Image (tube, rainbow, N blue to C red):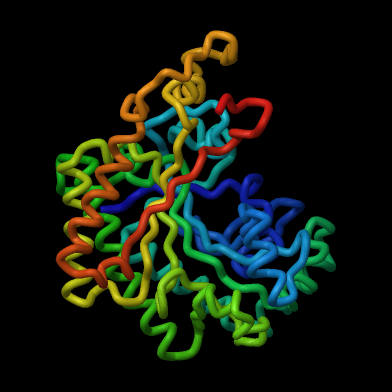
Length: 357
């Protein structure tokens, strides 16, 4: 089975500076390998607390960000009008927006992430590429100085619209007639393969991992080799798996995904990665969710009633399903907590002028 991923050279503009696999040709940029869509970017989506508690203790300052390696999936089951991934909600929109589309097997995706980490570990070569880019592209100014700070790798990020969404345009060569279950099989294989690769990278000193708490306690001042990754769980590389959770409203699907992860964990096939469901709520209330889907625009605050039930939110059931089933398996083996977690966050663009809570 192969799944569609996209690369938008405009949206992932910071990759132009730091990614060693980006070629600059006639003021345009492309990835060296035609079947690859993952990129190394500056991770700018970090709060003030992180800037103060983490970067402030390893020499980072305002405007200096750690790194993430990201893959954007094609397609989504929602149509949020403010979504950053609007260009590739469909294959047609991705193609018309100039996005590069690649169909990649789970094993190949795992290998590509590992390849990117290996290239980061060759620090002198990485720095040399950045120096040559600065000489030929004014948009790459500051890349060398940023890399010389040796800021940490924060996470691997599986993003895009909805990574679990699949249809005939987003998956190929699947033997499973159910596209959701086929996609779950895809990610389970990816996690297992990538875990093995991360273990090899650690053993060969091409990836170093340190817990965030040690940074907060000033046990690291930014002097470890590059790349060093900040860990939520000891010895494990963070994987942020973005989701809007609509699919997880189906308890059978949720149990299948997390239950199979639990099996891999008990078989010691997932021992080097921490998978974090990053659950993106499109508004804190049902009204805000419908607003995000353009059912009623703009929201008239004078007509909003706050007498609503939490369980009326279209995304809440998926969140509770994930939470409940993770806790269920953790009650069997508490160490499963080192393998999987969930974080809830507000969707993009819920700023003060728009939000009603």
